[in-house]
Image 1: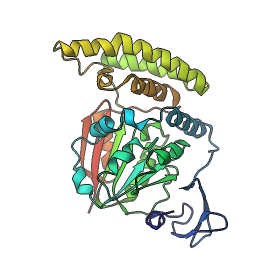
Image 2: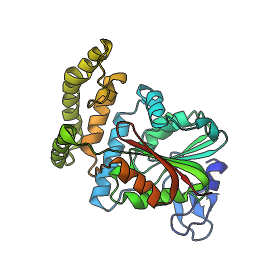
Image 3: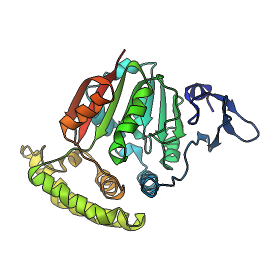
Image 4: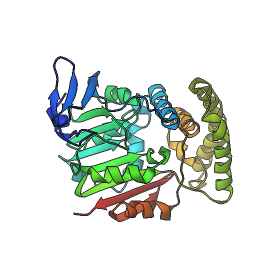
Length: 317
């Protein structure tokens, strides 16, 4: 357990720091209230199986997803460029960053090239995969915890980002308020949220929402098989024709699923599982995202489309 990580952690009960690990039990011990967080396989654990049924399905869903779709090399670089386009990454040299909802750690891996210290957090067993995928990076630490109660000290991070996570949480605003507290004055928050669509694109999403009433209750193995069949269909009838159209100069960038023309098949497959598995799925328009960011106290908010919405805001200095 690195001392740099221990210095950033705070007790989820009283907010105090930790004194370090106990050699006898391999736990972090709160200096004030004696709260103890076990360290299992080198990862501090602040959350286990939730009592709430929806939260339990969400945790299990993402744990299953990122354990089975765990090859970061398939998408990490391209995905990172999409999510962090327009961000001054060089400004993070020597800085501290929180990846809130890291999944298998693909973005934490890329961020490690720029930041001084990256803390990658996830509340599912995906954190074990994230730890495996970042084990050779000395400036990345992993913790298992909930984004609704991140056990890290307030005001210590220069950037907090949460990509594809907050729209799967019942109280998105509460989660975002908590994350903003972790940012230093003048620091940044960047999030990704699903977008609302209108017209015929909205009708397609309405069909997806209807199917989700069934798919979010399926056993994961059954759902994974169904998503594979759907992905094969989409790849052959939609993505491949897009590639052919692009080759002859036809601009189809605004059409559904065009995004996948630059990725291998497995990314489409992964995303279909993601889309149909998590029990909560919220969607926003650009004004709603901007209002959300401003309501939690961020300024200089910028929202841009990126197969959803990327929103960046700055905490008051």
